Length: 212
Image (cartoon, rainbow, N blue to C red; front, top):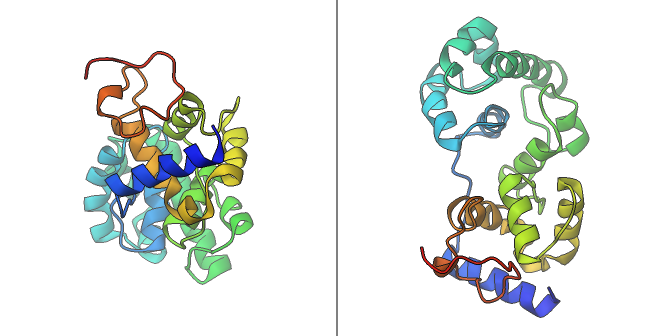
């Protein structure tokens, strides 16, 4: 995909959704961090259902520590891998208080030092909470980048590095949200909705669907 086509692609995604944002519901960088940690191998909807109740009683590192691992587990049992996630959230909350005065660090290395926080989670927090032009490549973005020809790669790191090179600067801050939402609702894994796709004519995917 050449640079002119890439610009047209993002111009159309922007026109369709001028102010994209995460579908996770949060009120602070800490709540965003917890929500993203819980969202691994889970849907945003299931996470929001759990955190709606959870954040009423434990929306800060201090209150999360008071709740404790068993108390947290009671709120997130409907989410996959809840035992491990509860352990990581409590450990992360403790380290935020010990190392960062209870604040979520605006630094990749410091974020990735937290239990249960990998590169993808750090990218989401840096982009969504702090406005950094990072792109967290999940399965949706990986699929869209490869199908369209926007930034093909064999693994998520390759795709991330290519996207950071080829996405025009003007679109980089919101590229993560545009691509993930496009993959979630249009360029779906089993049956992409090509007839409803605003970038279908720019996409290089050879097996486009012809009916919704």
